[in-house]
Image (tube, rainbow, N blue to C red):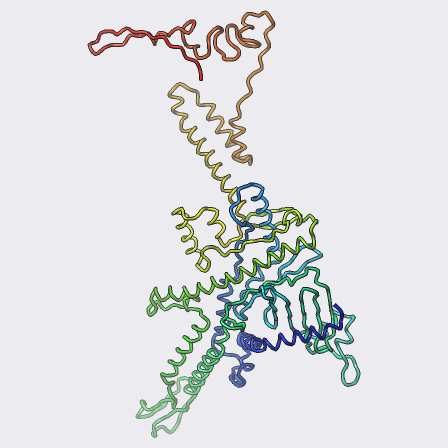
Length: 606
């Protein structure tokens, strides 16, 4: 983009700033309230002896309390539905690890507390995706929404993004030495400026280019780069609003907090005046001793008192009213900070207050989760567009399990940028309630284990976790089989069998486990059958070779192991398959007479 177009860009940014002038004023007021710069909001509200407010900064404490509950990252999965093939499961598992690497490499976990605070204070959270050409990966950065201006198209996509901030001239001259003379300027004597004053900078980004310029230096362009990505890589989470204005959580609490501090200052002043009020003494006191253990002699000691004025009861009532208004404005119940008076607040009331608190968390999770989902999709697209054929190795930790994975964007992303970000099916609940709720659903067979895993708010590789659970279950089944075999050793000994082989196999499993051999490998080695001994081949013409073959005893069949000339299944019968003696035994009738009978049968193995 040519430098001559900078005037049009400056006019466009100026129009955006005019449209958001009311919003910027609210942002500055909230900033001053949290920074305890109350004189910037209401001049003369603080006396010289007390330059800071003497009451707690409810806006700051409420914002931090809510942000700490809203800051934990959601679970990230790239599954688009039920997968049946192993190939699709591996593709999704690798893509999920790539998404986790984007979040981990961007240090998003440490950025989220500040980002959640900005979302509550200013009503917006901005995820900016930027290419890191040195590392060859995209990065996610959370930008301060104060003095940020976003333009949207009809589809709700970000059309342009502008950011305004101030820096000292000395710092800017060090960053851009080629423009140092123009940045520092000249004073009234023609000398180069010291650079101590702050100057305004504007960064404008759209689908064509990124431009950094200085409005106070005739729109001096410090940096200009073309946008090779072709779109504005930003995703914005905004608080729900009822008009076209962006509003924060605490915009309407500033003046009630100022009034609360003012009432506290008046009460402090009244207390100070009461303590320092003069003494009223009877007329018979001629001398007033001062100091510790001083004694005043009088005939009317009950008339000695301080001339003061008690604080009226209405002042305490007004302070209580302001406390309630501030709590309502911040939507933070006393129970959230542990300030609960059980003598006056019932359990149902506490549950109702906490219910409203949980709804705020759940709503914030919906908005932030949607924006984070779009930011990760932009990371996938940027990774494939800028480094399509570069083989990369990513590593990280998923649910406490380290992983290392290699991927090539053109092969392992292949234009599939979809990702699922979820704070869990029970978002807004505390962890104990959410866990009980999910277990109840699972116990009634309303949901599957896979669904429960995907609804957990932790970073969880569902496919890898399912494989680990399967391995544990099979290992447990192996152990149960070995335990059952060992428990039958006594029965084997009673029946005349030798149990030492079973005991030796169990002992070998213990030895291998002590050496670190996995359970399944130890079982395979312990129960591996011994190879049969190799017998020497019988020379031709040897008796029995026709029947038994090589190494088979005389008269035995080599295939069935039965005596020669006997059909399979008749080895225990008489010669030629005749009935054995047990089949010819006589039975006894009810009268005790023998019942002689015989039968002929022939058995053939199936």
